Length: 307
Image (cartoon, rainbow, N blue to C red; front, side, top):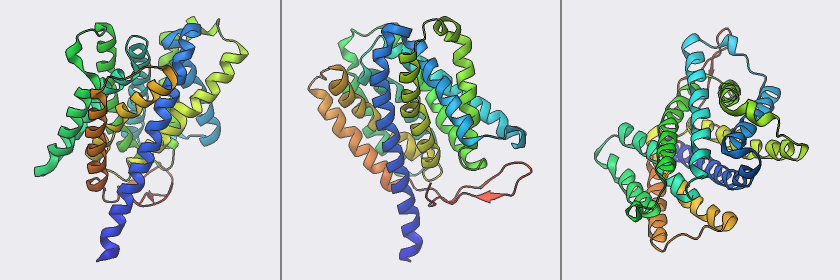
């Protein structure tokens, strides 16, 4: 009996640790990216990260998209568009609002996934805790926020919700990081169409080197961790666990950008940590279906397998 229950519990814990590592990388990368705004702007910073990430993943993984089943390939392309959307909209929002506030508003995306995908009597308990924490972190009652920044953050929330659902779908069907190595180049292409031509002329060796380092920090490492985490956790638990990101953003904003949070943010951090712990304890998945590359041998990605 012990061995039967231990595997899902270990699976959820390892998935939660991966998600926590991803969120830490994301917030550190975003805080550092803010310093590039004066040189290439928020969209330029997003494009630089995505372009380098595409080069890194194409060279390291060498994806074979022609071997994907057609529905999987379409889902991977959609994932790339959602990834590009969340990256660019988030950077536009961060240029207008504090990092912690943007992360809190963007969290409405994963919170919506958690509520929509939750089951059972306690399905709303941890998302409810998370929602209270987000309100305390965001303090919308102050009424001094940029409307354009709020709109960009909410757009990023919608893209993030799509990203979570599509990442799990692609990760369950495609082995390893093959799916990510296709979706990130799609995201980079979308960012190039939006802002690439305006930025290329401003690039310097220093900016290129900084972009390479930032691409590893965000999105290569965190998005890889999230794909593996979603093979171990339900989308509901993962979405709730993402509530920790606004709290991490508050800490990153304070440490790296000098953005001092109001006192009630400490209560918000307490609520979101409680929600994150609850999600970790109840979020194990059964093993996902086989990860398939068309024309290749079918492989099963067990929920408790190490990455």
